[in-house]
Length: 139
Image 1 (tube, one colour):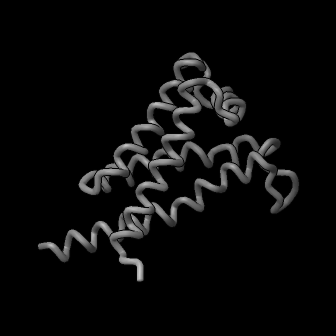
Image 2 (cartoon, one colour):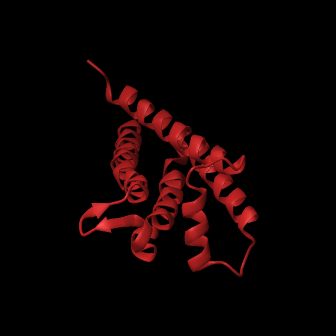
């Protein structure tokens, strides 16, 4: 039987892999999401920072989130950073309707790419929940 602690570590490593991989692809400028990021950038913060710097900062932010998921004592910080990231990543569903939606209730491939972030929320919340319960048991 698999223990809760093992499942929690598997979830942490999975979150690390996804965030680090996607972030690193942005850092080295080969991310398939670059055009999506550019489109969102164009309708939100275009005049505040140039796009290459924004893409680099986003990639570093995602790698940072990945790394802090590996440290249980940083779980709360990881959750808060994930929530910021989630808000940013679901914006295209509302601001870039033409590239996110094919039809009513039908997401494009880009929309499905965005939706995976919402699905990851369950892994994030269960990891946070386990950490809080584990902390209470140790006290």
